[in-house]
Length: 169
Image (tube, rainbow, N blue to C red; front, top):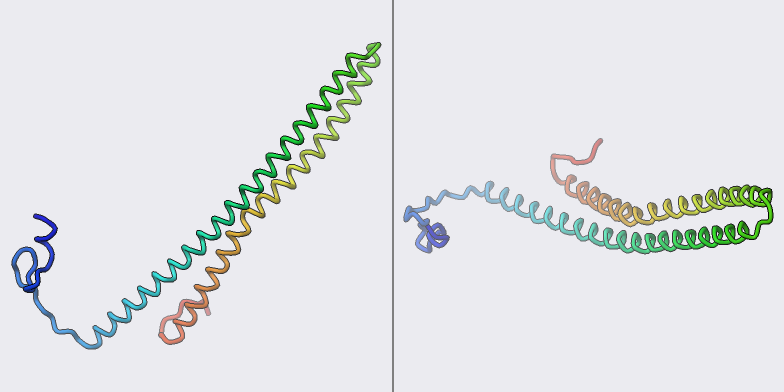
């Protein structure tokens, strides 16, 4: 059976050639159904607005995350470059050593320097990672709070005229 055969025809029959029964519309029922349709349309508009707000939040979050990830990557490259230069300097000094004592002294100094440098670099990376997490989540947090506030305000406004209540007392 095709789609056209199932649809209601102009003569008041469905695709099976059976007459459709016309029920009398009760005024109250019609009014309630119109209110229900209006509420459903309002609900759809709210969902659409909330969806648009979240899309904006995700775009901002993605943009912020991309910038922050670039900053983090650049910091890692900078740290790698500094560590490579330090290791090359150490090997150059090590090759110029005249005695075993010089080798041990240089090695101890390099180990101390490497530990101090790694501690400082880890602290920098940790702070940058925290900044990335905060900046990435902030647009989403801001927009979710805005949408929830708008929804809450609309629910309070609609519940004032009805016997049901969506807000906790």
